[in-house]
Image (cartoon, rainbow, N blue to C red):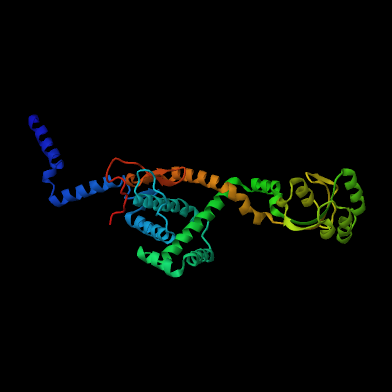
Length: 349
């Protein structure tokens, strides 16, 4: 009969949809564990950068190193705590910021084969030891159960981050802009050795120039002893010695670096009077060597911009009990909380 068909269909469906209480207890426990795990995955134990997690153990280790260095220097771990923040929370926040920053740059460093020079890391650790003494350093490390190898690894990370910062700045600014700045700031990269004759008027300077335009240095110095109005010229012969071009007033410096060794300048006016200059020698820092100095004033701006982009690209999460992630600085900021446990921010034992 047709009236029985729905009943049989219903029974078959019911067989497929058993109530939870009919599921074996072991299976129910497994379902609960999986559900809890799924819920927990939405919030990191401490922090998450992309697909990499910072766990309790990672943070405890980073904090221990910060505490050892703070003890050695006699300063609070993490510096001055923010308003309403405990000292331990400040230490945890600073240590966590360091961990996040490392995870932000580690992939770039690996991909571009950037790593700190072992000798430079050793030198940094040795300088720390020389400043505070080997015994004090070992005591501070031992008190927090960290080792010199841990300190070396921290130094390696710090120097690698600095190298990445420079590489990113160079990449974002570009060689053309750097070359342009090198040429504009040529005084900063030039050292000159010069002699000069100082007189009061342009007419006097022109007469001096006609006398020395083809002179040897000895002839130039001899005239300086008698013609220059510079105090002490009778003894010095107008010799200025070797100095960075930036040490001189701009008009004098620019006229000097425009010369080749052995050449004499036409009269140059400065606030001191009129000069005729003889260039003895000139040393110019090559562009490749000057790049670090050119990049340094710009590196923070470019690196900060890159970190902000990196934060958006990776997706950074910080467990709220440790603070609030700031993408502009790729660090953790303190968060005031009315929760009595909210400021503890201590890794679980």
